[in-house]
Length: 251
Image (cartoon, rainbow, N blue to C red):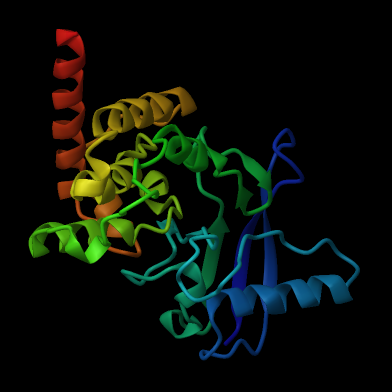
């Protein structure tokens, strides 16, 4: 395939960015999107030009690093797919592809397509720890009764890879789906009950401090999430937060 790539180039977070055009010939439909980006960079390096900076790690749809806006969609046109798992067969010969970084004040651009998502890490750190008795006669995890429905929902929430597609898809750049997934995976399990109230309050406070917007209730986050994290988690987050706030006010 022959492709025209419109790629966002930005030297650093303080520099003014712009779209630059590149032509690629003989792109195989069997390539992944990141392999196509590798080919572009090899071409740029051979021409003595600066390669395009982009995040990647596992390239197996697990780590969440490969965050790219592709033709206006987080991770591209395929649903339930990360950028690294997107293949060039999703495009046609002669296509023009726009490639940009996530757009959010809480995700400042580091360089080109790389954004700083350490705000997500700070939100998780604000959640603190889970109290578990590790001395003496520690109870075996298998001996703690957990309803299967709760266990399944907790596992589903835990599949969130923290890529930030939910933020990129939201017109308010809200992180509610991410935060709700991280809250839900512990709120549903008995091991997470001890710090539950402090956890939800601290994580929501940190989310607001990082500058993420409010939830828009449009569902764009769930639609673009590569792991299909459900909006039900946001409802659970709201319930957990309200309950924790009311209890705190009593004291």
